[in-house]
Length: 355
Ligand code: OGA
Ligand code: NI
Image: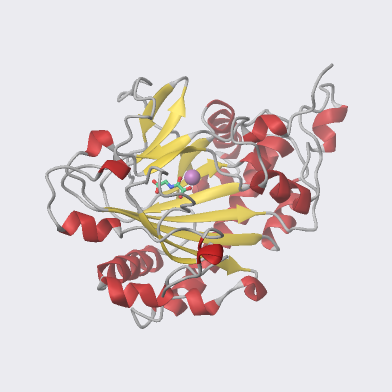
């Protein structure tokens, strides 16, 4: 579809599908993907392991206290952990993985039936690209708002594979249940009244981003996903296979998040960081790629109900420490994000300035 020039600047410029590039078996990646601009000096630490939390232990009186301590530590020191025994059936997760794979395996023209449209971030496409000079990520994706029901734009929900919409519906409900139970324990870890927070996530807003990272002829010169922290409350990531690619910044080292069978990766977003008054931090993370295997990830961004203000929990303020972050309405929070100055970190812009 040709777009009027005035319109085309308001949305992501069309860029090639990375899957299509990968099929061409190039020796070198096109210049727009070469990321010599990125700081590659941050070292990796291959020996560190992201904490593993067992939900069965959290709900079992015998093990609860010890596992909650472990979770509290994970949130303070890492901002990311993997959970097992999260209550979602293996078959449901496998079905979702299978259909995401089938979707990305479709011919480009078919996938484009659900392509992003002017002015919308939803749909199939690539990263949000606003200039011809902008460097690109080695990533194709599809982004959908999944909950509440009235936020859905079903015209972006792929009708191929045939069962995909149904699977997406039940997957989003499964992820909401996981989010609510994990928020219960995160807020307990902070010593807060958990039910109130569970309710806001029960009635929260959920978005789904399905990522495809094709193999790359020069994996060390590109990035799958730029380093960032999520603006969600929490983010739930499901790996589609056993190829690692997600890395988290821990004590100034990149640490690989190794896929664990049946686990869901949880990382804290800025909203939990703010509620915790900085006790818990949203970690920087990124995705790297490799030269032999395609990797896919299924990422759910979980937000509290938009009627709830975003600010440090009162109880944490009263008990001594002054608030580190401003309290904003949901609308102000997103407005600040979408209108942020790129040279200032978003989370720093939400801190109360000490004079
Ligand atoms: C994201 C994200 C990481 C990954 O989509 O926000 O951090 O490994 N994804 O896909
Ligand atoms: Ni992320």
